[in-house]
Length: 340
Image (cartoon, rainbow, N blue to C red; front, side):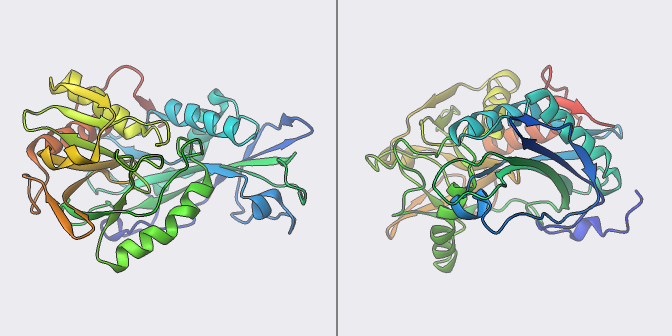
């Protein structure tokens, strides 16, 4: 560990590291791409990304396992999801095998920033792409840049995962036939006002309902929901306008194959939420955040698992998935990509 970093006191923020990967798309083709030292980007004042928000991103992590390897978790799924996003935003697809290789190169170029095993900290990896040439009439860019940087981040929960309180939002996260199912930067710009408003009112997150009927559960601004029924069934909301979370898809496999739970991926109506025993939000950053209470315009829905700790099933899912990620539990074929 060559870097003088206080691993135990890291927050979730940006720390500049030594290397980042950059590839350019020009005249209809990608160049080879390479690691560079300079963290700054130079572009035209009229770059498409600055005018029309033609940009997308992914998020994944690298960490040290118990046996000392540096690994990442299911990067092929992130590559496939970015491909879907690029196709929807009329951006060129960065080939999936090269995409994964760019992740490997970036992590290898910053190995000293991968936190030690057991610290709770990880190396967060941010691949992203944007239209870089000047565009003034509304149309897609012709030139693009694909970049990957990484930054060490602390444990999402300092001192354990306390259940959070969230609210039902009056805002829509996505349009019925919009871009909710892809990881476009513009989705996150739209979520900033509702999340700041939620925080001002004392809530940790928003629960967004389906934009067409507002009767079904969708997701929060940055995570998918998981619910546990009183008889221990895992239920995850299904919708064409929520982001297909890689963590959520992995949790479904863990529930069924490792814990023998029944799993249902289906539409979840808001009026059945009160009948669930446990609730959580899942995503790359926190893996699972337990939800203790949902407030619907003053009316409280309190889960049996309470406000003190994760519910028993949620805890088992969390422990099993993080155990797989950290190399303590054998992973399904192809889930762990060893980098070093």
